Length: 269
Length: 291
Image (cartoon, rainbow over all chains, first blue to last red; front, side, top):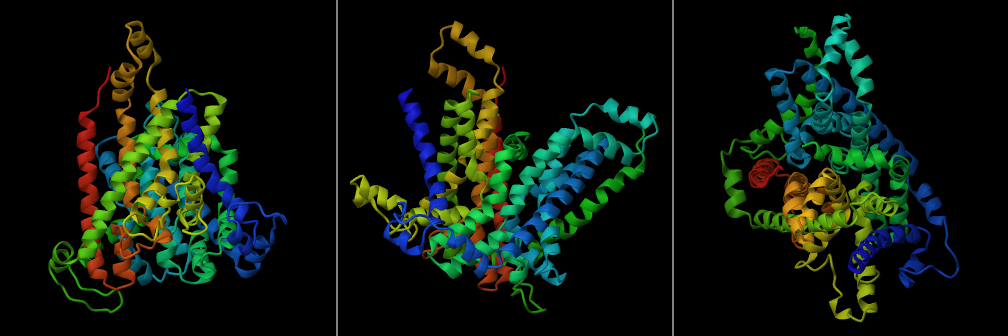
């Protein structure tokens, strides 16, 4: 029992200390950090870093870019993936299986594999330095996992449901929008969270396609701060805090969905 | 029951995007891999298998990045799976405290890799970092290190960070797996006088195999995708000691402008992932049991 409790305590400290350090350091000056990296300064904590970062950086702009890209990517991926999952479930034959295989094979190919051809494609299409470009690439890259999770869920819905609706004269679109979507809400929300975390935190695609500050998302902007502020950890951690706030708030309020979402891409395998 | 052909309309929007931004680039990676394209000029030459030959015979950095990637993967797979399994077993009961602890351990998963990279840059900082200070405090200062600057250990420092980042997610998967094991199996076994170890060995472990398959498969793919974390934390250095395959593809393509060669490495990368996935699938499938 004692060993178990100490192990849990050590793990908890290992998670908590670095996180608390981020919060603490963001409220210290650079000098205070160098003098005493881990202590609380005697002359009190400051909020100047938060003010400075908003003055020195176009933080609000990065925030808006990240929000636009994430919200559009998540909602469109969900919508398209739900339509495909519905189509596969409805077909329920070898054609459906082939389409399922086609759309989910993308899960096996990490986006890093495609970075070279994707870059030249996006360049040719004139979609570099464009939020639209990021959104389109995001959708294509997470569509497979969306199709995978949602098809898994829709296949568990009773067949009679579709048949009864068809006899009642409902077309595919009505069955989809009035019956299947409302019933799939738990699975849709779990998938939404999973996609939200992926798109909000993604670095690779912005790194490849965005060079203009006006279109940078938070992770890419953070990476640039490293170049500008070097080891000015108070400023870096202020950036980290600001970039993480939406996720943390969502995590606190929607925790159950997070756990369901972040494991749904895997457990149903 | 006859389904109208109109059902195929549901595939159209997704299929268009998926074809343009996934299927087409995947196929064109294969095409570019047979060329010497520099990514900029309009014309390039067909070079046959030269890029592949260069990767497997003449490029020591590529070989090093494959080795680093495997070391990283093996370290993460072992320690992450073990930690996740042990803590899942400890925290399996749905008490309030366990619930909050699981939520805490899961927390790093929601952060961006860049944030995690900054946090650990500070932890590992040779002068300011908590780690070296802690070691000094404990009177074992001789263990202090330049954790990311020493090429012999940097890849392990990164692997540890990866475990910190994602073990909580795997823990949750194991907890779900444990909850799915019917309780009466344990009760029946206890009636027969089975020891704790026997309970684990004969019930928990075999019935947890599906979760273990998922955890290990997921861990492996994450190890190959650790691009963001490594790019932000060490950029592959010092002296290529933390270069993994994906960061090396980036270097070759966007620093050396050798798109043809980078495509060749991408194709090899994809084959390696496919091979490892296949092996895991075979090995872990054969371990499955049901009662």
